[in-house]
Length: 335
Image (cartoon, rainbow, N blue to C red; front, side):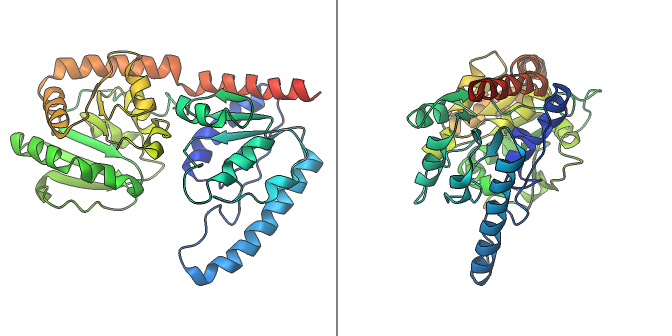
């Protein structure tokens, strides 16, 4: 039971594992939220959406009881609410990849977790929090290392600082804008490439050195080949510590060196090898980016190590096998 076919958490925590799950002998069906798990922005539409979404989630829960031996529940059925999960009579795994327990209705996630047979958490910070609710297992978000791969030929383009993600994360970019500006000023041939659903609005960066590219599923891997270094700034907050470093993992799988805020899982991944540089202050960001953009040998070595760590620790095949083992653990316990 997922929040929608195309939501990132569904794509990377569930859908990409379907071929491997089925190849292992499991019969798998997906009941996704046809009306979505999040309310529409227009307030007048919300009552109609709410009635339809609750009715649909009720139907989905009853179908699980009728058709399944085990349910994989990807986050709450309806964001921030505890609704038709109460109707589930089958053992279920509750998958969490963000700090969804924060906010005014964060207790809804904890209520769902208390009823779960197993809580699957994307990182240690989440696992520590949900451990009070029931049995917990760590399962990182996997990166498809066949889809995200190093470029086949050496780049002949401009030195490029790259960031790819949802526009909801632009605030982290704006926080390091002075450092980005300092780098672009020192390296007038360099550019900042932003891949997202809408363009950012920087206050002071030179327009000639900033490029926006609309994100598409078809181009999400290929566009990373234009990056010289991938960045993942974060603030040090509970919400940021709940993130599962997927952006960083896609850079690594693509053979890119990365500069990241050493917050939460980012710090854990950095500790796995010499694959990137940590940046806490604006000076750190400036120095790290200049170092990698001006030292191609170091950048290449970090990118190679990052690719090796992505393949050995976070590949789709490796994580998919871990998911299969967790499913069988709960099935065997239920029998």
